Image (tube, rainbow, N blue to C red):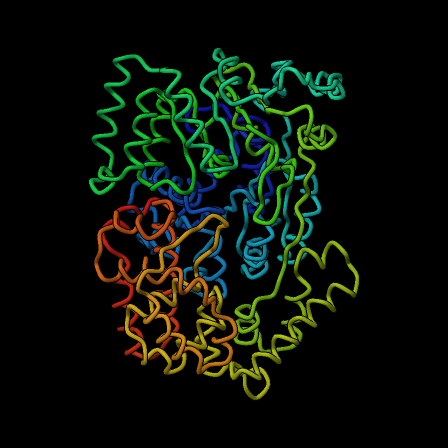
Length: 630
């Protein structure tokens, strides 16, 4: 079978035949085997039949990439994108969106859902994500039974169990297509200072040899490894630290140049044509450009979207020999290299350092080996024989053994939407028992646990005035059904008259403190914000819930940065008020805008709607708008 000028593999043909028979399909196939072609066929089929398709992705970067790809394939008029802060052509037959947006549309009973035929869930294994897995699970649970799904993932050990769950709750046939063989086989190696490129058993053999005290042994560095694999370039060098990605790139760029004079001229011209004018003034742009001209680059979430796109396009053009990247580069972005390297197999997960799990390792490792170019892909991980736990390394690198697991957690928003849309006790019981965890256990206890959580939240909502006469929603309850993050905190502030005592600048500072996700190393200047801070505390303290749950420390730390931006300062000035990277600031502002749009949609009060428009205007300035491809 031919599609897009390519001869499809048998597993792709099998999946497509199931789509032709209007079945849902779970495709579990190794990274780099061509799962995307199945999605492309599905989209082309239903667009030709004038039926709507939604493509969901776990991160905005992947949504943006897919939006661009689909616009090229089908034309801009056929494609829309919805990511909370960005809405483009929302009536289009092909809609690209984050999974959160799809779930929110289901709960809000958006009319778009009535005309939907197929939903494509890319990277469906994100259902196991501790923080966001519930969103994916609810997306499946709340989808109408007439909708069909194409679920794509790298290897899923329990794919059949997962498909059986979907089939049970949706009452239609769900087929599994598995393909474990890679088009380009991978070779997995370690790299140790004294041994060089080696195997796990090689390292075991020298692990107990004592260090020569007269000559201190330094661990292997990224420079050591890159030097040894010069015949295996281009490579993606994964480090789980943004700072290290930049540090490594500059260290290598000082030592090596991989570009010819002609290539350097092309790179300079390409950058000049594609960089956003405001970005040219930034020190981060100058630092990255120094590396790019030598065929070295770095890529992480703290980079401005415009710079990330430039890196990606130069890498695709074969002008980057070594790309240092965090693991976000491995999620869905189809940019393989001949080799993949790891500076370590441990990462900080927000609480502690831990070894990667096998899915994380293979998500990154799978980028090695370019189909149609390489006969083999090469994966190298730096280890330190003194400190590396080789048993854990063996477990991580042998094969992908991580099953999909349930992370289902009831939010207040979900409880309110259940009460609103499913008035009968029987309906709610069925939905509460539809989660993957309950299906896996098939016992009364997990059902009781979820039902107890539901009942407990209902009582809290009744006590706080969101529900009355049992489970009937009040105006405040209706408001909260449209708020998908910190719904009670936001509703307590903005469904009351509290906001009337706040100026727009005050409001954006409060929103900032609610959406801010703290990182350990974040630093802020407080400056002269204390007077405004005390005023806000006085207003907010009148509501006990707000006074108790608002992150007051974040409010104080963010006030100078946010208020100065709202007052009209230049973007460059913000870098004096915080050590946040430019890309982090842009993404932070967009989260604020998304939250303010939710408030505007939730309220029936025209004065609050007008105030939200004012607040959005203060934050959504040119650089935030122009950088929508984050």
